[in-house]
Image 1: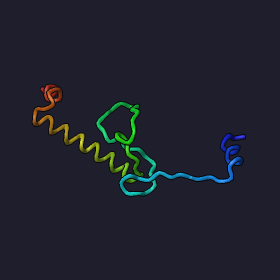
Image 2 (image 1 turned 60 degrees about the vertical axis):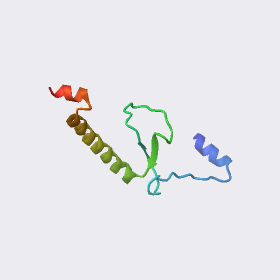
Image 3 (image 1 turned 45 degrees about the horizontal axis):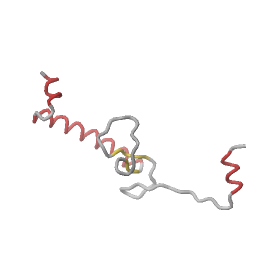
Image 4 (image 1 turned 90 degrees about the vertical axis):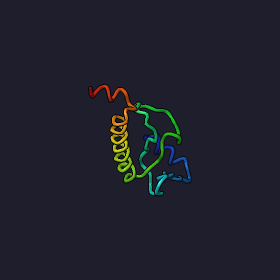
Length: 89
């Protein structure tokens, strides 16, 4: 027998919790990383991750990628990113 079924049989009341998007209040299903950290596994809390709905997660990924593209090109133009500049030479 499934352990979840056993636990439900023992309880007289079940409270289902739902997460909410921090930006719009809809049901949240995804966590969006708010930092530039690129490691696959990053143990952190609300300072690094935020809970968002499906729509804002998809839009957020687009915004993050666009920001990286703009910042990368700006760094090359201003010469502030020496490695990127040297790779073009």
